[in-house]
Image (cartoon, rainbow, N blue to C red; front, top):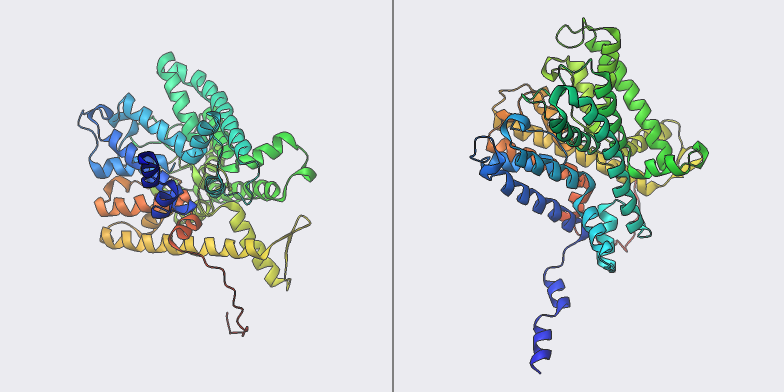
Length: 458
């Protein structure tokens, strides 16, 4: 009888009912826990070169930025953090890039655990998948691609860094920058907040890091399609759209940056043509979600900054290590507008029709993302007392929301309230604005159909 009473007292179903959480809430909680753990480690004296540890707000900001693979930082990773602190950073970046749910699933599955329906739904939500079939296989594939790509480029970068940093340090530099670039985090170890400034003529370095950024923000399903299906006609519609958008955004962004900054004496003017083109293309690739820059951004022209803000807001592809509203979302919005202008009811792309549900979701994501960015920028500007230019404030806000990490030199100047606004923006950007909103709103099926009536718009 005592055993039965004990079992009843610790009834798992009752505990589940008491602490019932939606999959979206569990995803957000997993990132919050990772940020809390990262904050604790960065506050330890062993993490900083001054043996004092970071203060709470700085540690929270840096841990969030690393966990959400953003790249904005209020400390100099090279000069202010010890080897221990840098290792903490790269672990947070790696887990944040892949997603804590992804890594936990692989470990648990390897131990022989069989997932229940509730847990499968959480995985499905975290991976942004519409089907529960093959989730574990997909996760294993993600892990494999990640470590193969990062390992290959880590070796190349290590060899490249040996003459400059020595054999032992070169290994650390190679691993750190390979992980940071593939996860689209944008952190570097070159010091003094310079990112890749002064290295714009290092074409090998730009090629390696640029390739890692592109592979990371292209998405794992696209990589799988390219490796296994190989032919364009066999690619899924998703893969075709991502590839088209990647080429279009890189080309348009690079062309605008080159046309404007090649005449700017503070950025690219006076450099060899090959270097101007390389830096323009690299900036166009990096500003989508990676955050590494080869010239000082606060010296760039307004047109360039606005172009970069748009590219950052659009961001990477779904199921990638990048952020933003996603390139496929932007594509659906553009094609929907084009269909309206042509008087068409359906969005047809490459011989396939995009459903009305996807179109509605795309507009919802775009609208919610815009509202969040504008609101956060307004609050930051008010907190800042309008000390900084509105363009710079908006740039920082979009950079945080899209998990890009590019800064215009004002990140370390925010007060604690400003840092908290950016911390929340980074977290929302990493988990996705749709996931964040669904975690707050309870959905109910509408069984009543009301009569329609037209209104005037436009």
